[in-house]
Amino acid sequence: MEFTIILAYAFGLGILLILGYLLIIPLKYLGKLILNGIIGGILLLILNFFGKFIGVTIGINPITALIVGFLGIPGILMLLILQYIL
Image (cartoon, rainbow, N blue to C red; front, side):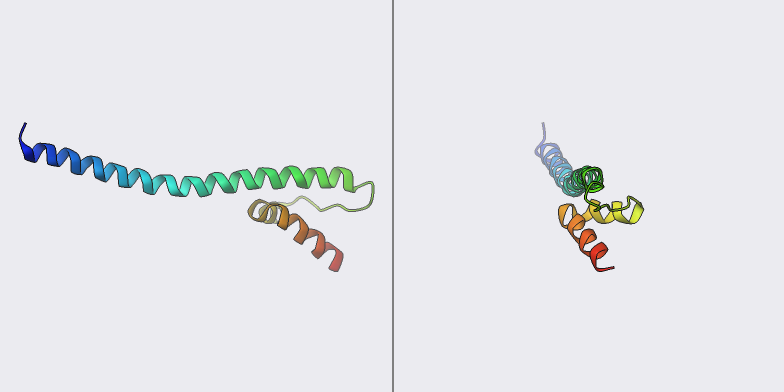
C-alpha cells in the first residue's frame, strides 16, 4: 500500500474520532437532564402523596414539571418556598 493511502485512512479515522467525541458530549448532558427530570418527577409525586396528609402539595403542571426537571431537588424546595411566600 502506498503511504498516502495509509495517511488518508488515518486522517479519516481522526475525523471520525473527533466527530464522535463532539456527538457524545451533548448526549451526556441530555442523559443527565432526563435522569434529573425523572428523579424530580418521582419526588414531586411522593411529596404530593404524603404531603396531602399535612397540607403541603405542589400542583403538577408544565411549569412545575420544567422547574423540577431542570433543577431537581432544589427545584422542589424552591417551589415549596414560593408556595409558602405567595
